Amino acid sequence: MDDALNAASNHQVRVAEFLDRFGRERNLTLPPLSPEGVGSVQRGSAVVTIHVLADKNILLLLARITEQPKLDEVRARRLLTMSFLETGDAAFALHPQTGDLFLRILRGLDGLDYEEFEDLLDSIAKTADRWDDKLGAELA
View 1 (tube, rainbow, N blue to C red):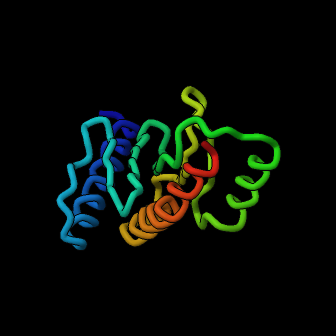
View 2 (spheres, rainbow, N blue to C red):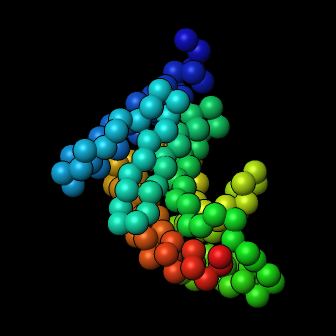
């Protein structure tokens, strides 16, 4: 196995261990990270999907806020401003194929430790739980 494949495999194993620990520490029964590097956590009304994009050396956390929001210039500007001021490590983004509104966090996998993983996952889950119902109704 070459170094790149070995590193990618190690990243996926490490994030799988982080997800397992996250669940154990909260008495949650979480499905394990899939062989494709995808997992999920529900916190409140928010469902956060975890994607280990090992070939790109990226951890991607996504939480869908609403399906195909109706955005005009005022609403789009508000989302951008909220991304800057109110979403912590996360940012609002439109899915390029579906047009659904997500919160997302991207982070390189190198140097990622459990405490940072936990912080990122808590941050996106709390932010998504705060905004999903409110923005879903506002942007319908």
